[in-house]
Length: 431
Image (cartoon, rainbow, N blue to C red):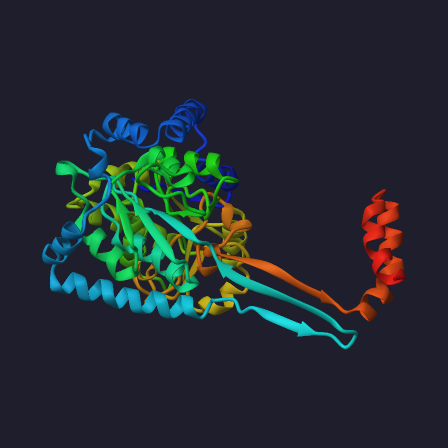
């Protein structure tokens, strides 16, 4: 059952426990396994990828079976309903429209002193997308990762995702990938897939940036290959924090908490409310909605271990606790959500009002659903177009402009003990 505590209890330590839920004693052991996989793939390429796919995912593949074929991609369209295809295309439109507004513009500034400064944005050459395939299929994750890469202008976008029974990849995932502009798809998952993208194999190309969520082995692999390639973030289990007052609908709040809890037994679902009556109603509504839940076992585990209702003294106190927790998803189900939002400093995505469930953001509102977790919203942001772009500084000085600053450069270079830095300027202004 979803626990209820009051603010007088040790709320902060309980929230910290939930925030730290991925830091278990098995991480070092798992990291050693991941290091072994990475090194094997780096040395042996496809051979190691196939070995670990057989060992971990129980899929026996040949090298030529790693890549999803054109006929499989065509067949996927015949295996999804027209309604699903329309929904995918609607989501594509909305996600692309949002991200096109976020493309940074290159710029050049011509100064009066004949100095030209600017910034030039260019996409990476190749992006690799990891799409999980464990507890469910995630066409929405395909869209959220592939569309920003497409909008950024990445010329080659490849995707990896684990196959299931019969070496099949979910047709909804394949359709979403095609609609979003993915050019290549490989049926491999786990740390071996991350290694293949980071180092390249005979079949799978080396990429510049890897994005997409996964289990602890995928996350550790991304952490360890960072530096060889760029990554989006180290994603943990999903989480939602709801702030609600007496105007909130208890059934809505309960459904929103369960919408996160059903993701994974380690998902977190937290309610902060000023109304003790609402707290009890939400607790009972959660129990009712769990009765015939198709994912009841995993959802109940998440609720039991990482679910929490806190009765707080005020909305200000709720905002303070929310900022400390820095949730991936923050819902403000209060009478005046815009006023309360002014007190929020740290959250991956903020959902305002009772008609804006977090599921809207998961699927087609437009903003990305790949968000910082486990408190990372204090310093990190959602995946976006910028993830697939890099920027170069542009600098040009005229002879006159260089002469004006030569003395200052000489002093700074001499202070740092770098005489050739100073000479590189002196030679130009003394000729």
